[in-house]
Image (cartoon, rainbow, N blue to C red; front, side):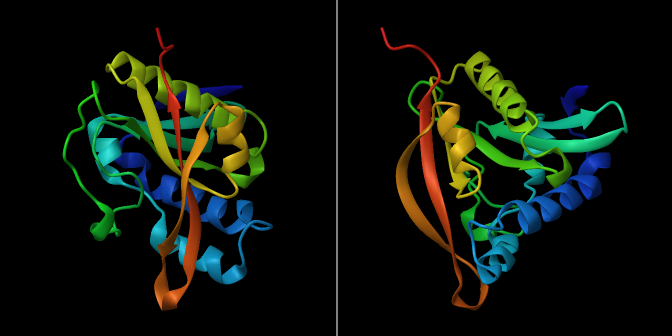
Length: 182
């Protein structure tokens, strides 16, 4: 059975391991080997999410392993980890006009296609909605796009995030309303 909780600083090493495995395995078939390697410079853990209490850990009770992780944010940063200083903007968003950010969603390859991503999405959207946000946006990987479309997100723009050695990583900015329009 999958359970969830908020991440703590004690989880950071295990979360980084899940992220590395997800990047290495789940992007095969969507990106070249060079783009997968470059993804490590573009993606990763943003410990601000853990500090803000907006980052979830999904665990498998049967073997006490992390099945996945992901969060949401009320800050302007759209994507990138601690090492992506050029992408970071800690300014708070205004729920009345800005979209909450869905951030850093990763599923351990052993748990792919078992509902982990949908569970994270539900937790994030509910928390963002409770904080007053009316929309959500994310920067999606190509491997994540099918899940996000199935969850009601639509593409806003396609971008190429610059990685090391001039290797660009294709990403898709996606969005979704969190409340019904009157």
